[in-house]
Image (cartoon, rainbow, N blue to C red; front, side, top):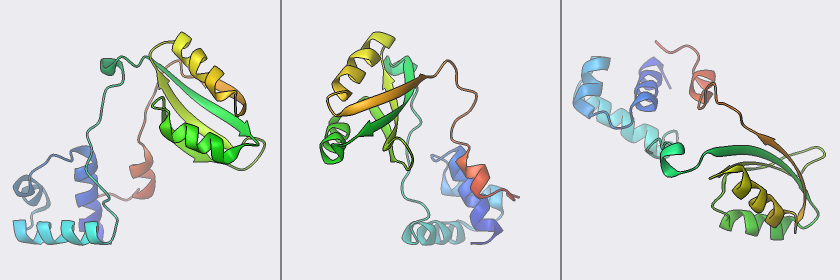
Length: 147
């Protein structure tokens, strides 16, 4: 990947709905050249999809928590987690806990109810988010020298 590919990824990260013509104007390349680069980035698996950024509060989800979970019933807990709409991110971890979950619910009461269901499979330590300073900073960490 070169600087042009990095620029394309940066533009898409900021606005996945941008048109090819607008992107080609920003990058100062022809539309066919930009289209070809996008195709290659998709084929290489660098670009895996185009998604909408959703407002959780507009969807009625006001409580976010990170849950460290320890289970000796891993297969069952993983199956439960896949079916649980409250879990939006799910990570297998090393250390004292098996899993790290990002959970979103309507209220602290619905979070409590969800955690009670989880305790069938093990025990947890929960960190409730008070406020979010930033999210999705990953892109700048991966491509720090964007031009």
